[in-house]
Amino acid sequence: MIYQALTQMPLLFQDNRITRFYIGGKLMHEWRKMPPCEDSHQCEELLVTSIGAISKGQPKGYAISKTIDQQGGILLSDLIKAYPNEILGERFQKYNPDQLTMLARVGDTTVRLVMQCHPNREDAKRYFHMPMGKTEAWYIAGTREVEGKETCVYAGFKPHVTKALWRQLYEKQDIDAMVDCLHQIPVKQGQMILIPAGMPHCVGPGCLFLEYHECNDVTIRVERSINGMTISDEEMFYGLGADACFDMFDYTTYDDTQILERSLMKERCLEQNEQYTLSALIEPEQNDSFSVQLVTITGEYPMPEFDGHRVLCAVEGDVKLCWSDHSIPLIQGHAALIPAACKGVRVVGEGKLTIGIPTINEEVGK
Figure 1 (tube, helix red, strand yellow):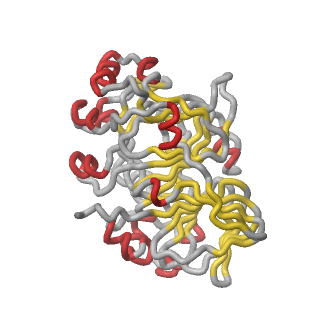
Figure 2: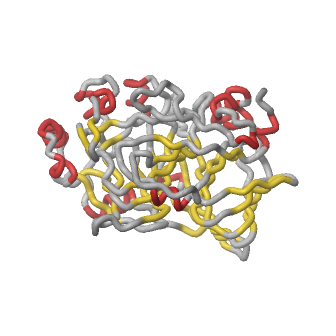
Figure 3: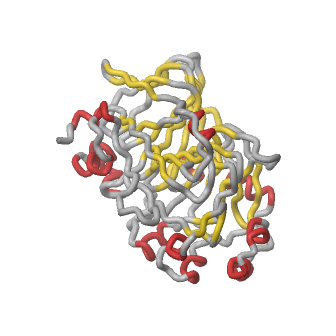
């Protein structure tokens, strides 16, 4: 039985680790206050997801979030189906039926991730019959030194790149030249990187990254092997031909200044008092998918009313989520979903919390 009372409280989720093509996990375990582990391909945690992950050999619905035992151990997808308006909000249920509009995951890597892009909304509908594309953003939650390599991410094409060159280098699998097609952006803890759908990108070594993204897990990959693993055509192109997949890349080019303006977000203070400081990391006008805020709490932060769902993550320190006469701890590195029907939530303690807020693109459906 699914209890409607769950729609009126912050939802926490069980651990949800998946295997990826990159290598890491040790720093993520430390950050999430989990037992120590060695770096491996078990390096990504799906924090809040109603769709799970697309993974070779796994069924549809693999790795969908499940509430903690204290909250019934219920699949988030089942809870949404039972109470869509209460979880998502009526506007968001109409916009993206029976699914969250915004998801969250965290990854930890000692190596460069595979070069990739994600479909925009038009391509997602055309090729995959999915309602949403995948714009994403990374909050750099931590860093570590890896064999003297600079902690960085890669994003956007440099001025010399054309579609023909990108395709030619792919056919040759000239990986060094392909990496050189992308801007290398040094990053440090606390920074936020925005990756619009279609932009080529990959996270570099040494990054612990909290990722907010649209409700889609399709990834177009352009490397046939990386980090000791072979990538199949299905994992690269999802049954489509290479021509269609190379059309999904956004071939906009950027100089060194332009890529920073497009993708390296500038934190802006929105509100400050003795109890908390609220800042914008990604603002609504900077993309049509979501915004992200950061609240630094030294006492109590009352969350404002909102008619949709929100995704919180404790990025520094443990806090308590309080509502009515109840409370539940939110441990560093863990996330919570605030349903639309959950009102009067207060965050209490000392720490930093990111808040992901989905946006409705009014052009969708026109």
